[in-house]
Image (cartoon, rainbow, N blue to C red):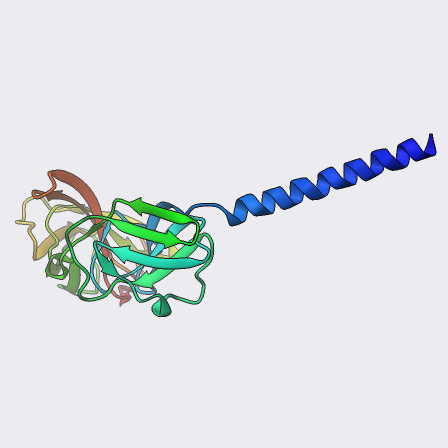
Length: 226
């Protein structure tokens, strides 16, 4: 009986070791997969991206990125020595080159275990939205704040910073001519403004690809404290 039990325990131990080795082998043999692309810059919140611009830092999230061999964006090869140190099997963070192609709409990851493609749009640098100035940083309830910049057309929401890390939605003044260079908002009452980022949400139309997409732009940290 004891011999039978020893054999049984031995068999169970062998099965456990085999299953563990098999699982490790499957992990090692996993082909790469990109699930999403995120903007990853200190100047703005980390958030999932619908598109990016040359010079921006993006993070690929997925799996099977270990033993990376090639990283290609729209046919432009990324220098792997420039990848950020927190690259892992699930994340690849890198800065888009200033000369990256803006046609092709594809990110390709190649490892020793396989290859994967992910559809993603890189837009020309001259189309990147930017907030450059405010008509005032002293915000009075009911007054109109003019935000100026570039490529601000299609603004649907404007958020201003409040105390304790909160933010408030400001109504867009539809009586004004809101365009690529100017967005007008009405300052709400009963809130305490603080130093922080102004956020503009825009609905854009890409005529070349015939798609509508949502894009955000942030200002630098501005002191709106009254």
